[in-house]
Image (cartoon, rainbow over all chains, first blue to last red; front, side, top):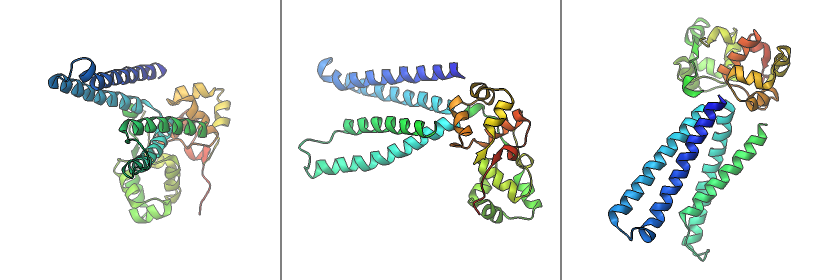
Length: 130
Length: 71
Length: 66
């Protein structure tokens, strides 16, 4: 069971890193590497998207490997994270629209918020069920 | 786990009818929705241990009489 | 839900780790069940009943809410 888990975790880790790498290439490539070539930019974006799908599949495999308590912990954390992401995301958008913040709202900030929230809720739920 | 989980079998429908209860009546006694009872009878939904205990108490039998985990 | 898993596990001379291995869950899950923080799924309860040679209602007892 532990060996299988290591395999699933390694798999997810590899796909996550390659997703981050292809995201970085698709983000900075057009300016820094290939000077706005449309075809190359399209290829980079599609590669990143396909990589993202594979990352989700690896995540699903890990999730199916989880036992009942681990699934409950993750599902509770996801529910909280989703709720907060919607509420905080829309508040953030409102702050931008009404010019209460002096800069533009970036989707990256929201993604970062989702990641941090998920990690925190996971930790809290782990402690709750310890 | 997950996919290699062996399916849990049950003969809830038969036992419920033997007890002369409708899905609605059983669901009220076991404190769940009628849809849950229906999903359990159709083998779509595996109830929690608590719910299984409540159902077995309502039908006045053991959990093992209703459900079976194949080897 | 109350349960007697810890008592029965010790009676069998098993550690949490060993019980987890036999049932096919993590040690944390066994611990959470023993502390009554988490109710196991029905398949898990069945596997425990088989191991302890008992009926599920012999070691999982829920308080009546009625």
